[in-house]
Image (tube, one colour):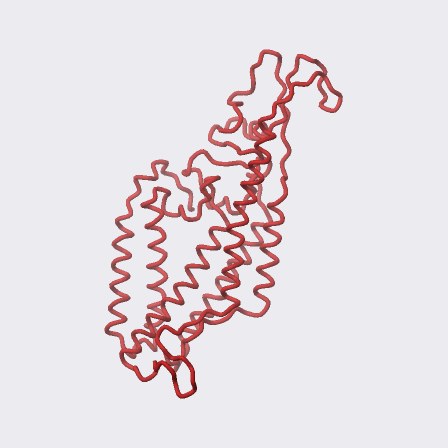
Amino acid sequence: MFALKNRNIVKARPGNYSRGITVSLLVVLIIVLFSGEQLNSIYLVLLWTLVALTMGSFIVWISLVSGVGRYGVFIDPNRLKYSLSRFQVVIWTLIILSAYGTTLIARLADSRVNSNNYEAVSTTGEDKTVGNVGIPAEVLALLGISLASALISPSINNIKGRFTNASDHREESKEGTEDQSVQSSSVKVKAKYSNVLRLTQPAEEDISNIGALQVNKHISQANFVDIFRGEEVKNYMALDFSKIQQFLITLFMILMYIHRLYMWFNAPGQSISDLTVLPNLPENTLEIVGISHAYYIGNKAFVQSTPAINQTEDTGEDLPGDSGMS
């Protein structure tokens, strides 16, 4: 669905998204200038939708002008594959910031009609200024967990790739040894991670590796299914349950929080001046998300592939394409 099939990605035209962003911003401006008290009804939900679409279009536009395709923001630049941790950060940032921005815009529009509701200090001593909009600590913690995972995940991959890539380039020429099942001294023994790719996908030319990590050669090979698969030469075609469980939990939490935001914005008889703090997360959400991320990161930390042995005759000729890391 999200596969990037056109390899000449840099020629993608961002013009349509630029126009879409402009139209969305104009509609938001019209709502702010002319809606007045109507923001207390369905217009508030419409405003939220427009703000979210504008932010999403801006992200797509940035990806296009950067030459990485419409969904390049989700792609790990080191592996040229879709990244689950990047997906989570982008989606949570989009949801939280769009709701926060919508609340500020709505309060700004409402202050033009009901200025008395936005005094600097109310009779109760509460700050009622337009910009006084808060985000619950639990919501910020959730975003922080996603950001931390997005930082730790590529760091683990970089360390794993650098460590295993060093061993991948150490070629050992051994005479017949019992533990390697080699019967002749004329046989050259090389245990390398790159050989695993040739054993599992001998006809595939567009795959490569950095040590134990399997990487794409072209960004056009990126496919949304990558976020469910393993990352090493051994399991890059297999489903990774640590990723599946995290995606399902993330999807459930996202849908649940979107519903809470919708009910918050669309509450009957609600005054916009009372929208001062975004809705909180359900109980135990942080614990569930934290456990999910811990399992995901912990599973990623271990090298699950072992180098394969390539045996050739003493002609110095290797398997086709055996030039180490590309």
